[in-house]
Length: 108
Image 1 (cartoon, rainbow, N blue to C red):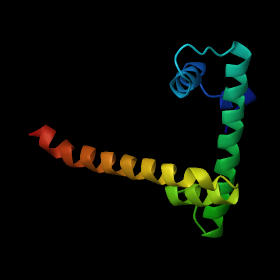
Image 2 (tube, rainbow, N blue to C red):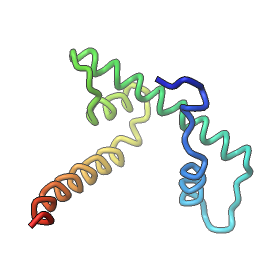
Image 3 (cartoon, rainbow, N blue to C red):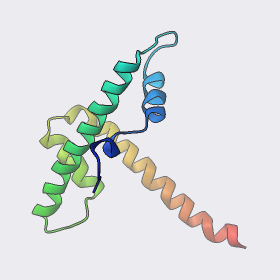
């Protein structure tokens, strides 16, 4: 668990990169706005994780799965993000399988 509240914040460089990718070129964001987005993102992640943990506990599990996170998105009424999240999860799983199958080939 985090010792200080600040330990839960996302790195500023990551938040800045995400903001820049989301906005059109030429738009700048003030430092206080980046800090606000970082804090809001951290709070959202904590809330989503807590909701997913409740779902996992209902299933008598201690490990939160991707499906728990997807169900939690419905619980917290973020249904519009489920399809993109499922697609990202499938892409991640596919990449992991490819990486795993390529590992023995690299050893030879």
